Length: 555
Ligand code: AGP
Image 1 (tube, rainbow, N blue to C red):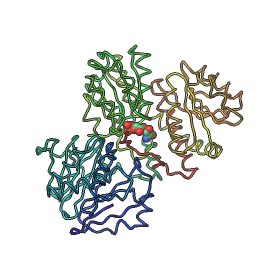
Image 2: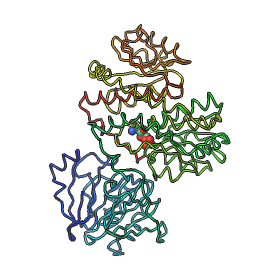
Image 3: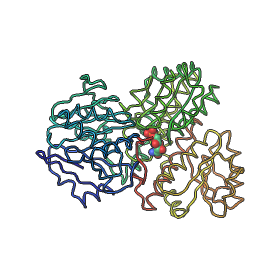
């Protein structure tokens, strides 16, 4: 954190949780009418006090915080060192502070000095810059990382996400790529890439502050899991014409790609499954970070469907850039209103599930399943998606397995390996179950198609190995039960999640019977609760798991 108090620029920082740094450094006692803070996610240089942000220039005339990666920082640093600059950290970010100081000495204009400095940067950045001799203003700039202005009453905010300042204002100005902004308490100046003044009116975000409280829950993650009976209904509240527009684009597409990362990719796999199987439309589902390698058929006439909670995932934004460069149309299903993805896409459907604070995606996943099902139903010519009311009741019913899951956790919390298997349409849910458990409990977990077990992984199964088998009634139920038999025969503790009980299960978690297209929604609930309670039992913080970020804005 840095503040400027009448031309006294003070910086206090350290490695650790915000509450620990507050104790060690009493950040809240910093004085000043202007300030900035950043939680660094290490890319260049270890997680150390000196690598923490903000970074200052040689003579501490300038301080910078940065989200992103400066790819050409080494040659820039070499040149700055050769010209007598002294560095205190190993980070790429510190280069920016020295470059801005250089330009500021020359131009004496904070906005133009920042613009001149950023012109030398290659890579990705959202930055905020403070100047020791200008306690009345702050400058920000962005390229391929989100940066948003919050317009308050005689106070201004700059942040990577509206959630950061939603407690103070819901009036926002979304900055475009290569824009630089100067904030004073009652004035915003934006310059475009070629230095022209940009006039942009603030827009109001539809999210309420209330959405940000944990209400009576211990953690955001548990609150968001329990919000799902409501959020599956709000997710289904879509503009029918917009859904139709998506369906038309998919039907007309010369080639169709579905791309996303992490949990959103699992929702994409479910969409691909129904398009291939029911609509007979070929769709390639590729993780966002790999799309470039698989984009042979991506070009004019192609459609890229993307899914994202944050709408800021760097891998996904790169994939979108690639698709657009090749002339493809981009249709996105996203939660964050006004996010880069929403603004870069040709068509957008919003998840309407409210802000998701817990790092683990929960309600956004079930909302993605509802919205993608609506699009597929529209492709199949069904203008109205039915069964959402029943689904909401079923999700509320599924949440009742909470105590059973807590008991299960006590039996398995010290295990080092967990497996999740399923067949057909449920396979992506097995991947999702494994991802949730890994990211919240730090237990090694593997999700896979049950049919693949006997081709290798079954060698890892021994007495007491916990294996979750997802096998709701439907086409693949019988085959899933035979896989469960094979596992039990080798000593596995088979944990069955299904609407049909079976004696092969050592533990049976009942989920309500729903329309097959909604099975992933009700099966996700016990998987989310398993991961959440496992995290708590292992004394991990479910909301802020180690090494993870809610929005992965670096490649
Ligand atoms: C899921 O729980 C993780 N937080 C992560 O895998 C996430 O799904 C992924 O980073 C994609 O994020 P997005 O949906 O915001 O693009």
